[in-house]
Amino acid sequence: MQKLVSGIHHFQREIFSARRQLFEDLADGQQPLALFITCSDSRISPSLITQSQPGELFILRNAGNIVPSYAARAGGEAATIEYAVSVLKVKDIVICGHSHCGAMHGLIDPASVAKLPAVKEWLGHAESTRRIIEENYTHVIDPEEKLLAAIEENVLVQLENLRTHPSVAAALARRQIALHGWVYHFESGAVFDYDPESNDFLPLELQPAPKLDPARGEVAWI
Image 1: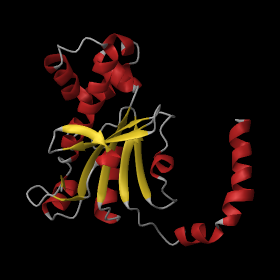
Image 2: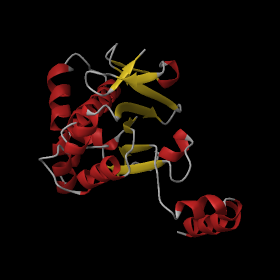
Image 3: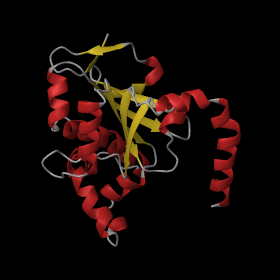
Image 4: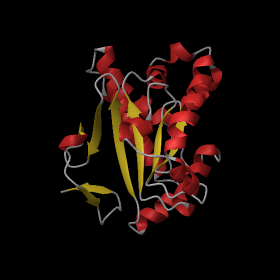
């Protein structure tokens, strides 16, 4: 706790005082660039990896960067998504998984969460991911490769769940929002972005400039 308190003191003395005008302007409201949905894992810092400033990211975090489908759970996730899209008018939504994800390990190894009933129930919102790995990745023997496959497939599953939210569906139909699937490897700093053309996650720096796919209102690549 002392480290956290010391950090607050440093922020107030060194950071806030030097950027007071920015924080005073934020008191008038927010206009974030994107809704960033990621895992609660302490190794992930969305503002750090995107080098974004206060007020630029609207962040939703939970174990496994999971988006329950709209009908399944009228909870905090649904409320956050609806507010970001309908009120804040974000233009982009990123679902960002990450390497060595404990939630995805628990998903594909149910015994590891058998004594964690709340976690087990929560991971039910990623049941499609578990079935994809169980039925379509029988050829993958290496545990690390299988975990990475689960992490990537889960990002795609959660993007599909995201489309069930009425506010997102309506914005996609108007072609006013773009959806992105990322996987962050914290040990290397690399970010991989899902490319529909190749049906693969490619290093973000290799991706061309995105535009909206007129057919679905989602990201297409040129």
